[in-house]
Length: 312
Image (cartoon, rainbow, N blue to C red; front, top):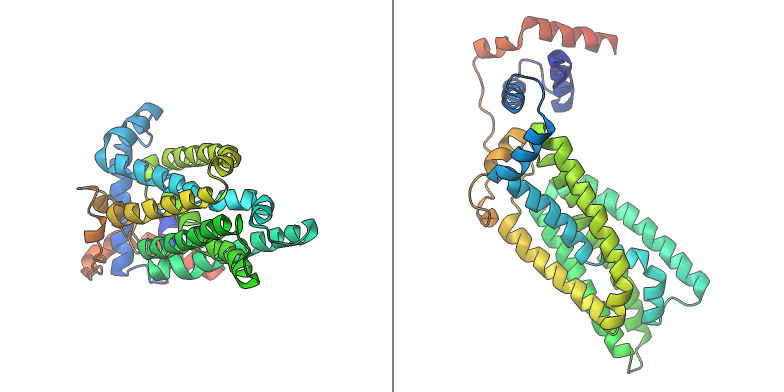
């Protein structure tokens, strides 16, 4: 967008670990330039109204809007943020955690565990397993944990419970956090950053974050009433239902985009909305290009990259 072609190619070369005349580098540069020319129409800038119009009237972009917003909503409906915010009161409702000091220690451990779970998910799960598999694993773990906690709370309201089942209930909270970190915590942010075409990326990201925090506030505000109206245990069955809806939604409507560049994602989002489970084929490898075509990157670019590398 800033007309720094040589810098962009130098960065791409370092990112891919490939020489400047490699076919993949040439192909990606070509795709990026085509996308930029298409997005700006040759003018170099789009008006705000034009961005709004393209976001909400182009079918592929409208599908991006729904996936971004729905994924943020489902993350909150899974109950993970609510558990984090009301962790100590929830422990009290479960009749576990000991005195206030012990509950605060457990709350700190819970927060730290989520931090390390997110690191694990970011570095090992999302790209290794793909977006869809990560969501399936995460939502399933959350749903099972929610159901166990709900059943446990219902039972312990009228009956004595064993020490083992109590410890399992606390463990379920941490398993729930792990499932959330693998799926609905990290991936909505990933979707909010990688799905949008360049011309509406900033607006799309802002739209997603605005909705995310408004919905988060609404959920945090409603949790005490939800616990009260559902005899406490019913709230976790509600969260489990949210995870079940998430599994169905991911199966039908969330395509796998791991390994795709921004330009290829556009093709994925064209066509029917409810066929994500059929679009699992990985993109074909970029075929080699003739040396004559690769030369169009320009000798000046190659020289620039070599000079910059020599300075490092």
